[in-house]
Amino acid sequence: TSTLHHPAQDARTPDATERDAPELDAREVYHAASQGDALAQSLVNDEAELLGIGFASLIHILSPQAIILGGGMSAAFDQLAPTILSTLKSHLKPGFDGVALHRAELGTNSSLIGAAALIFHPHLAAHRQPT
Image (cartoon, rainbow, N blue to C red; front, side, top):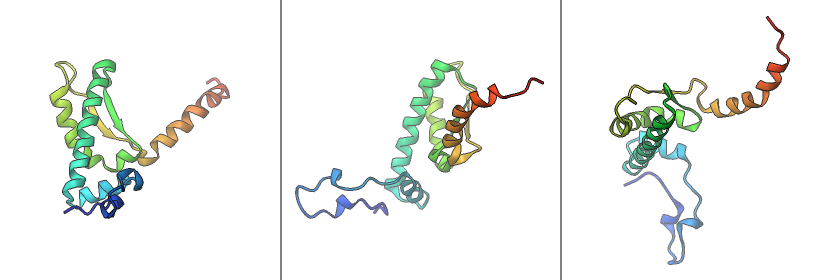
């Protein structure tokens, strides 16, 4: 049985639907998966596989040296990375291997800090003194 609890599972009326229930938080799913919950592990595995397929497409288009997982996904990096990497291995064309997968050093704050940097960077560059 799953430790994940979705309120729609408790519905006793035939017209109750999943749209009536609040969504599960990704942190709850990651936590349940780390505790051995089979449903949560399946959800995390599915997410990682889809990320791997998407990353493979981006790698074919952009040829990056690395992919950095930040934001909320960085907290689940250890759960996501093995499946992402195996999916990349099976989907990348020859010559596109060797792309590194890293957890963002700024962790869950990386998106916020990156957004702030985009806002302030032009202003900081304009006030920079020549060296």
